[in-house]
Length: 334
Image 1 (cartoon, rainbow, N blue to C red):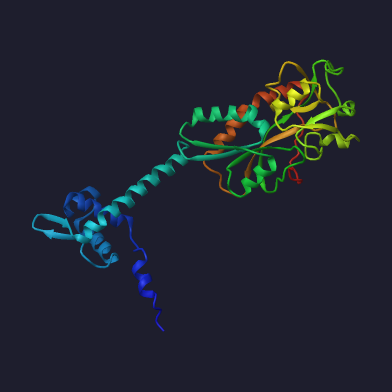
Image 2 (cartoon, rainbow, N blue to C red):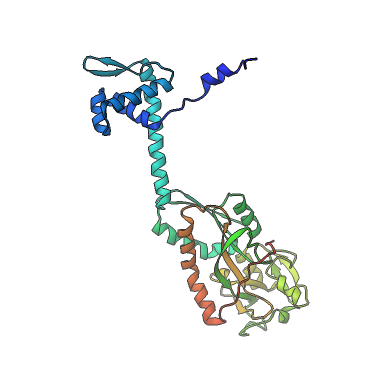
């Protein structure tokens, strides 16, 4: 039995057209002449005629031009086609410009995520560097926890994420991990604290302190290594922001751990002392991209900007305690 919808589908299906035909049609319409269009397109007049005939056949067979004693003029069908052909060719021209801009990093969109501490200095410096070199690329930035950023990356909602090993090593099998730096950890103490003048401290020396932390649980936070030292930190206040944590420390309400990336803007009424425990590895910071996916064209340039922004921090660590290994194995970030 014939399909009653077949005729309707045939009527509404888009015609199979060549953009070459449309370009030739527009040239003939603009000049009102097959001869002039052929000359402009570097074709023979018969080749132009064949392309117009093919276009007419694809659109149902009605003539697109009336042949006049002197030139040609669009028919009603030709006049109907004219704005659509113009729109198609303009869109294709625009697409070509956009693809060229992406390829040459002179345009397009780059979606970047970063954990909060990286946004204190590292990422803003990289963005400023990147914008100076590629001012027409639009950069869309968001902030989040490492675990959430990696999920966004895996779902294709970010092109690159700046993440850290707080709470565990990163799942290297799913991501390309580009090491940026290893962060020294500092303990922030009230300025008058008995340990404030020490050149370095071990976590075990702070077992009896009240702690200011972003989580009530040590697991998955900067305090996680304390559990390996045989004590569970007593979290007196849960405070999310680094500036607020410093305020609590300055008021004598406890101590807190501050990574190097957050230490640039430390207030003057607290003391920072490096944590030098062998059992407390430095926090490694990476730029992550999704493994197995073609990166956005601007990703390599932004990676280069991140490496340049991280260089001073790498040098400071190298001059201080030497480079430390940065594992990137199986356990995901929390």
